[in-house]
Image (tube, rainbow, N blue to C red; front, top):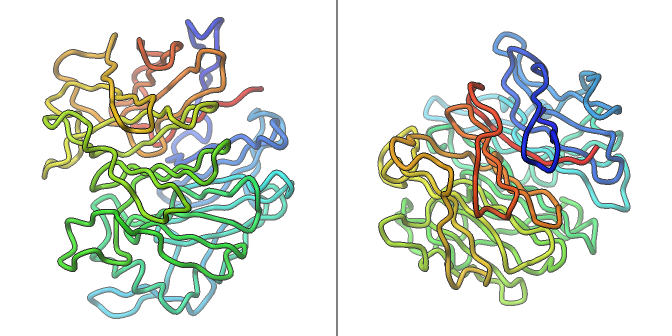
Length: 364
């Protein structure tokens, strides 16, 4: 954990949490700020979830981490195989009216719910056991290079039953009955890697966000561009076409301004065949829009001007709720960067860490 040393000008870093494991997500509960939930995976012990009730000082392993029910399978070129959780990738607090409820997205694509602050988890069978799960999620060999996963769980602040999820691969899906039934929500979104024009599903969203002050507006950073949806229209509009052509509009994270639904930040990456991903030309930069994607502005003051051969994963960029919003990201090279002026200027808050999977802001 990095703690503000004063005015967000300096940062104090703690000792490692869950040392020796990969931590995929750590999220504060906005309904009870001392509570946090963390997902991790140890190489020899497998995936699990940890919970804290004291702001992260003490952690306890979940008594029943997410696990697929017996009998569910995953298709592969070797035939159907038992579906098992490789890791918990995404954590999301439930609706404000449901204290103790959390959602988790896994790799492979699975959705789970906890009703006791993350101590025990149950399968959301409306999704996990859906008759079209195999069609939506594809075979193992069709997964992205870093693995298939369910991510970007969004809960409509007006209605606890209304959920959105993103899947890589699979696309964006919507439920209006707490996950009992689902429908694809991908109209207008490109899927250049699929031979079928305008497919109903099979897309590769990287991050999907719903703005809490305008919950009928969604933003999406996709493998095939940056998009916005006005829900009443029901179709994605590609707003990344206004990005510089030499940069493109491919990346992982999408971060929304907490008070302005027209403002968001993205971190572009080289979207060609290079893997692992890097910043375009080795020149990392954040791009910001203040008009819902009609124009974009580059911000890189303080970042490396050359040889910045790293990128930022989908959960590894976030914003706080300060008067001048702080924006933060972690890199594949193990550095955390911070801006205290809404992305105008940047400085390294921590370096020399392992590859960073996620960054979240919290007030304790």
